[in-house]
Image (cartoon, rainbow, N blue to C red; front, side, top):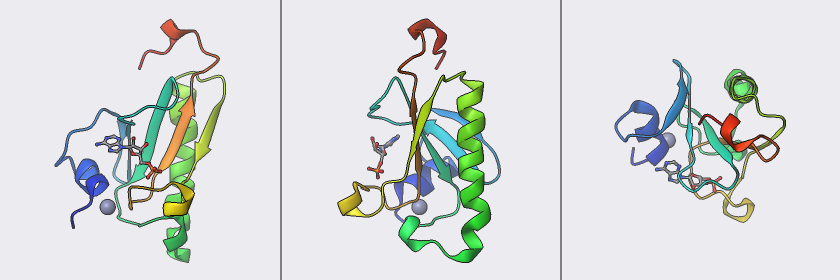
Amino acid sequence: MDCLFCKISSGEIKSDAVYEDAEVVVFKDIHPKAPVHLLVVPKEHIQSIAHLEVNHNDIISKLIYTAKNTAANLKLNGYKLVFNVGREGGQVIDHLHLHLLGGWGNAKESLNI
Ligand code: AMP
Ligand code: ZN
């Protein structure tokens, strides 16, 4: 399948990954909109929140739990978690991803990322 985030999560296309396990990968957004802007991405191809089925409940909670752990590891003082859904909702990549945005209140030198 010709999907950029499938290729990134399989390693076919390089990314700036900060975390990876069997189910998810977390990498830096190429056009950051915050001092820290990461994308938490399931390795399974799911198009968007609008395409969720009941069997995806585990992976959705995994995305949020991974975002929380990543933010804690980076010592972010606070952060936003955002799903853009569909073109009208600002989604341009049709592979589910959770934006983790933060770092506004952190001292720049503390953001070791
Ligand atoms: P969305 O608008 O929710 O679909 O977000 C897609 C995000 O992917 C945008 O913030 C882009 O900057 C980001 N993006 C696009 N291509 C890449 C890439 N090759 N590596 C990392 N981030 C990317
Ligand atoms: Zn995909």
